[in-house]
Structure formats: structure tokens, C-alpha cells
Amino acid sequence: MPAGTAALRHRDFRLLVTGTATSGLGNAVTPVALAFAVLDLGGSATDLGLVVAAFALAEVVTALLGGVLGDRVSRRLLMEGSAAACSLTQVVLAVALLQGWATIPFIGVVGVLNGCLAALSQPSSQAMTRLTVPPEDLASAVALRPLVQTSAAMVGYTLGGVLVTAVGAGWAIGLDALTFAVAALCYGRLRVEGGRSGTSGSMLTDLGDGWREVVRHSWLWLLISQALLYHLFYGGAQSVLGPIVVGDDFGRTAWGVALGTLMAGFVVGGLVCLWWRPRRTMMVGVPLLSLTAAFPLAMALSDRLEVVLLGAFLHGFGLQVFDVFWNLAIQENVPTDKLARVYSFDLVGSFVARPVGLALTGPVAAVAGFDTWLVVVAVIMVASALGSLLSRDVRRLERGAPAAEPEPVPG
Image 1: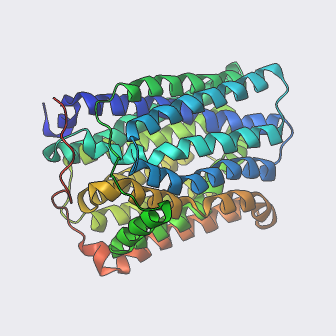
Image 2 (image 1 turned 180 degrees about the vertical axis):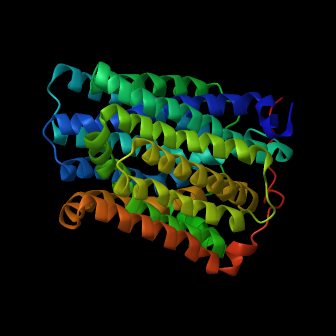
């Protein structure tokens, strides 16, 4: 088996990737469906921003708890239970939309519940990667996992636009419920547990240990801060302004195609990372991260769909290459027993400002003008990415051996 795909030799890694990719497909359908469900109920850009912000805030609030639990209890059970519960909440939302009794506040409430349930398992899911492969196949696993997930999401975004147009948002969200159920079955068959560190300290003590691990690495907290700015400004550009700008100019199906093209950029970036592993990963990844500005810039300045799709592709490509190198750096430099907590701080630090951006994008863009605000977002994304290269620790971070031996991987 080629070195780039060596991680696929391991049963538990295949189950982990199948579960995350399947739920990822459904989760890509849902944002498209929810956006137009809110708009069809008479919602404005501000209403849509508040609904998406409620989901994002729930994720942020719950992620730290998920990180602590992921280092204390069975990561497998946490992932299985979270996926099963998310399946149930999506069934409820799908039925509400299909039966015609859904309201915008109801969609927001279900979104909050779903966000909490999903966030409980996210740190464990990320930390589980190292436990499903031996050290020599870790780089392969870190590159393959997002490649498979984003390939599924690419299909999901495009499928979302088609389903919403053909059968409506309710059936599209019903598909997401099914994918969560499949994911729960995959996680239940894993033979590795993770977590169960045996710590007797309080949750606050565990959080403090995780925080000290984050601040011990200057490249880690600095790039988490950069991600905070990215999500503060870009979250609303995609989730609030994107469906309106692209939907009005080119049609609703075009927005699904644009998000599918974004995922295609992720896929190509993932394929590149299967064989390209530079020694100084952040020195390469951070400049490529600045390509994310191409999508909002294209939406603002071009009246041609192909230019918008090119911007979406460049965004996905640059972000995927950076993300693979970022995750590899965390996997190689953070001890196994702190990995879930560090990932929870990564999630919270990156996304804590996203609900604010989502809630304010509609009102701010209405005053500034949608196109003007999209240009402002693009400028901030470039400046924040390239500005992190001023740090010597970011520029000189090198690949190395994993920080701690993973738990034994069954054959």
C-alpha cells in the first residue's frame, strides 16, 4: 500500500473515518437546507445569522466540557452517544419542517441542542486519530482523514442544493439524521477507547492542565488567535451573506454548487498533503491559508459564477493544506493524555467569536453594503494569516516524532 494511504490498513481507522465522513456528508447538506428553510419562513439575513449563531455558540460553550470528558471517560462511548442523540434531534427538525409547524425560533432551539450534542464528541473524535494507527502511519492518518471527510462534504453541499430545490429542506435534514445513525454504528464497533486517564482532580483542574499545555507552545496559542479572527469575520460571510448574494445572483442551486466547489478545493489540498510534507509545515501552510480570502472577494467583485467558483476552490485548497499541517503539528507535539483538552481549547479559541460575527454580519452588512463588507472580510483574512508569520516560532516549527506513544492498536 502506498505510504500516503498506509493508515487505511488499520480496521479502527477505517471505522473512524467512515463514521466521520458519513456524518460529514449529512452535516454539509444541513447548512444549505437550514439557510433556505429560514428564508422560506420569511426570515431576513439577521434572522439567519441569529439561527446559525445559536448553533455556533452552543458548540463553543460545550466544547471545553467535551475536552475534559474526552480525557477522562471512554472516547468511543462519547462519540457513539453523541452521534445517536444528534440523529434524534435532526429527525425532530425534519418532521417539523415536513409537517409545516416549524418556526424560526424552533429551528434555533433545535440548533442549540444539536450543537451541544455534537460538540461533546468533537475533541474526542480528533484525539482518537492517534489511537487508531501506529506512530509510523500517523502522518498518513492525519492527511487521509480530512481528505475523506471533505470528499463526503463536497458531495453533501452539492446534494443539499439539489435536495432543497427538488424536495425541500425537511427531507434534506432527514438525510442528516440517517448519516448520524450510521456514524453511531461505526463508532460503536471501534476497539479502542481513549480517555480514562485516571485523573482524580476536578474538571477545573483538568482544564487548567490543558490550558497550560496550550500556552506552553507559542505557535499553538498564536495560530488559535488567528483562527479567532478568521471565524469572527468569515463565518457570517459564508453562512449569512453567501446564500443571499450567490442565491440572488445565480440561483439557489448555485450556492450548493459553490459550497461543493469549496469542498473540491479541500479534496485537492488533501491529495497534495498525502505526499507533500515539508519540514517547516507552518512556514508553508500559513501563506496558503491566506488564499481563503479569494471566496469572499469573488462574491463581492464578480458577476460571473465561474469566478465565484474559482474563489471557493482556492479557499478550500489553502485551508485544507494548512489544516492538515496544523493537525499534524498538534498530534506530534501534544501528549496523548492531554490531546482532547488541547483540541477543545483549539475549538473554543477558534470559534468563540464566530457566534458574534454571525449575529452581527446581517446588520453590519446592511449598513456597509453586502459587497463592501465582503471585501473588508477578505482583507482581514489575508492580514491575519500573513501577520502570524512575524512569529519566529511559527516560521521555524518543524515536523518531528509524536510527543507520546499512542495506546496499542489492535491488529
